Length: 314
Image 1: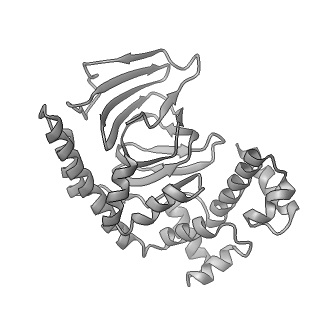
Image 2: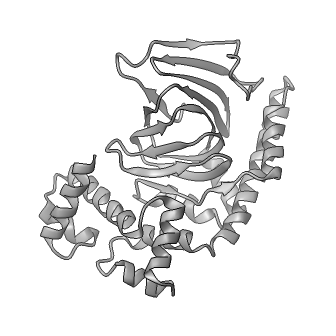
C-alpha cells in the first residue's frame, strides 16, 4: 500500500530524519515485525515512527516526545480513513487554519476520515503514542457488511464530499488491550501467519467498536453531533431548535455537548458552515454572495460577520 500521509517540516524544524534499527530507550511499544523505523529529531521534540506495510493494512505506531507544545503538519495524498488508537497522551487534530477537528484522548480509539490536503496535529509537553491504521478500500468494502453501525461512515467515506468526519471515541477496555498486545507481541517470521494475525485482531477491534457504537448511539452529545453533521446547512438551526428536537433543555444540551467535544453546538455547526463555504469559494472561485444561502445563512451580512470572526481566530 502507498504511504497514507506524509509529515511536513519547515527548513529550520527538522534537525535529522534517520532510518534506524535500534529503538530509543523511551520507546515502550516496540513492533518487532516493523518494515521501517524512522526517527525525526526536532529542536523541541523527537518523533519515532514504526511502520508495517502489510496489505490490506498500513500500520504506523507514532511516538512523540515533546519538551514543549508542538504543532506538526502532515499531508494526505488522497482521501483516507483511519483507525486511531491513542495509547498514551493526547493529540489535537486541526485544519491548516487551526480549526479543531477532534481531540484524541488517552486510552481511547476511534474511526475518522479526511479529504486529500494538509492538516495539523498539536501535542502538549510529554509523551504521546498513537497507533494509526489505514485499510485497503477492497477490505473495507467487504468488512463493512459485518459492521452495521460503522457501515454508514464507510459509505460516506466513499461517496460524500464532507472534508472529514469523526466517529465517537470509545475507551480501550481489557479486550482491546489484549488484542493490541497480541498484535504487538507477534514475532513469527512468516508473512502468511502475520497476515492472518493482523486480519484477525483488527477485525475483532472493529467488531468491538461497532458494538459499542450501537450502545453509544443513545448518548445525547453523540446524537446531536451526528444530527449537526447532516443538517448544518439548515437555516432553522439554533440551540432552542436542537433542545426541542432532542427533548432536553438548551442548558442541558449545551453542557453535554461541550463536555464531550470542547465546544458548543452553535460553535460546532457554525464552523461546519464556514469551512464548507470557504471550500466552495476556493474550489469554484465564488464570492460570499454566491454561497451564504447554501450553508444555512438567511442573509449575507450574517454570513460575512461569521466568516470574519472565524478568520480572525485563525
